[in-house]
Length: 588
Ligand code: ARG
Image (tube, rainbow, N blue to C red):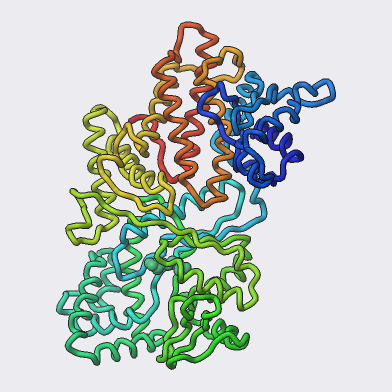
């Protein structure tokens, strides 16, 4: 696919001082078809050449010869005209060729349309969600899970081997605190003993949840205010845990099991999966070697009894490897995990989907990896994102409560169900569809704005079927399915492409053609919103087209041609939603 865009690239690439990648990133589809089928903005070249962009565009339009005019010399007839319009270079392509190649291509590729084998033989490791155990999943773990899952799917679509890792926060001094609290007040909170819990678990009836563990935390922090020694006791217990004490291990595993039960339940609802749950604890036995390598490289020093890597030279605070009580730290475990993942997966790229507030942490430990001599640190990226804020009203953070992910999903499905009742009370599998829509609304809201921006979460907007939302895209998909159902016949490719001549038909087919390009861009910038935005544009163009044109017209040939276009749009929306992690119900 992409032959049109590739043709433009090959025309341009010898004439301008930009790389193929850069050109590809700049090509646009003008909203008004009078401006050509594709446009190339000349600002970037003009800047390099220190020239006026308008002048650059006009010169290039003189210089470039459309291949159609060269066809007697063996060129193709894909691009038929090139002209300048202000600072833009506009390309006009053969409409017949455009419809033919794009629609046939989508028809034959089906669910795999949009993909490629660009990443064949390459591996991408993606670290996402990665919550801390013994605490509820909070909404920022949702953002990471949803963005990470979409990035995973994007790279997978491009043929990369992907390894999704949930780097659970299951290690650290806080588990010492929790063990102390459990031993002291566990029975007071009616938390079963390890033994009883095991029995209940085998019987499949624990009924325990993270709330209990939260209560233990709170109690510990309350008591420690008047009894300092608890802190020492907690430190001792974490030390025991690090040294492999069986009792400590058992209690810790107990906390972990309780947490994972809840996490898995939420991930399942969200449709988010991982290939590995190797969390921070997984590296415990490897930390010594990592620290030794850092020491041997002469990178570490002792400061205030702690082992650190001084990063003054790089204008960063030190990276602390070990506290004075020998306990390891978050950064130590991340350095160790990076080494391990390189050994284990030989990744070509490693992506950490973690909130912007951890920027410094990533800069620090990437620097340490660089100082250790690992060239592959250049393949590690921190894909950061902004906060989710809640508007007043239901589930507002103003109430001082932490918003729990599970409650959020529940509420969304509930509202979606009410909306479905109103819209389509006879729908057969209403509960299932409401679930797909409710969850889809939340996922899409996370993915439709640039990830570094904060998201202002507003129920009225998130579930608005006419807004820039997941339900809107899903609804458009269902509408396309309904047209196809009404048509009732098989979609066939033997259509007369010349019959598709409405402006919107042309815009639609170009958006379909550009779908693979937008997947590529979204992957390249780790920015699923590029794909969501493209789907929204596709949907709004279709809905406008649908308002003004009859698809099931009396003219049998025209009907057949339009149906093929409709089927292609349906397919592309379905493929796009699936990459973003949303379901595409056929009826809504
Ligand atoms: N557990 C951390 C948190 O909840 C996120 C971990 C992200 N991944 C990583 N490799 N550091 O803040």
